[in-house]
Structures are given as structure tokens and as C-alpha cells.
Amino acid sequence: MTAGEAILALLGQRAEGATICPSEAARLLAGTDGDWRAEMAAVHAATDSLLEQGAITLSRKGEPKQKRRGPYRIARRRCGA
Image (cartoon, rainbow, N blue to C red):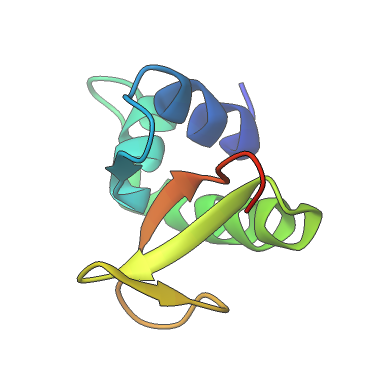
């Protein structure tokens, strides 16, 4: 599974409008005994790619973010958004 696939899989399990923390995708990639922090660079890169493709949106404390910087949450792009 790639980092992008992990992000999209987690979002697919959430309700419309729900978000995930990037570390959730890293933990999924690392598995139960893996080092999830080592996966964060791949998750950040996948986030940037998915954002550029228009597949996701980012936010912090409920406010939209245009690019990944500092803490952030990931959501599926809503239809028509």
C-alpha cells in the first residue's frame, strides 16, 4: 500500500466531511510494530500530490488551508467544491 492509498482508504471509511490526521495514514503504513514516524515523509509527499490533484482538502482547527504547512487534517474533497 502506498501513502496515497492509505490516506484515501482511511478517508473512505469516514463519514462525509470527516477528517484524518496524517499520522493515522503513517500508522496504517507502518503496521502494528512498525515505526510510523519513519512513514511521515511519504505521507506528507502523498498529501501534497493528492492536494494538487484536487482529491483532498486540508484544514487546521476547522479552517481551510491552501497548502501543507504545520499541523493539518485531511478530508475528501466534497462534490462541487
